Image 1 (cartoon, rainbow, N blue to C red):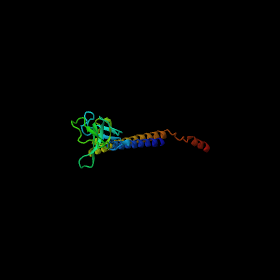
Image 2: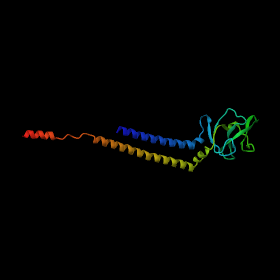
Image 3: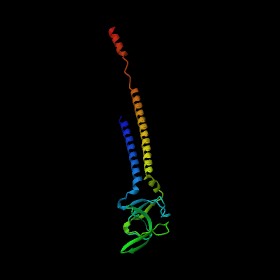
Image 4: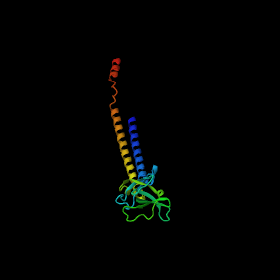
Length: 208
């Protein structure tokens, strides 16, 4: 019974770790591009082709703040779009640096664009310099952040968990069957009680 119990506990632990892994995967895929890391690292999804071919559409990029920025650096910066209070992120290359009213300004441009960006940016607007880029990974992550994508990944997780439950049931049934079979064999091997023929013979002799 102890062996059976230990095996059952092992199955339960395996199932538990699988569930944890699925949950962690969902959280990473959906949330990691939106959350700033320590030291102000940012993971961003490139949704336009303005930096082609240097940075392809659908890429994931990692940015890191610098003490200073130079011409030819590819940087991600924030700017407000009209009256919309939500700031937009753009990843473009610094093509010129100049001072205006004792403030350093950076003129940026996309590699695929023919003109400069309409407004120069300040250092406070820049969130970091491009350090790592991974092409095309942003497409599935961007999709999984939508309602349809979230439903899909939850459905896939449910299918995986359901399949693992089925496997666990089968494994438990196999363990129980083996245990019952072993128990049956051990009971069959028990020695039978000796026949009482001798005692009967003794009684007959005493009567005679």
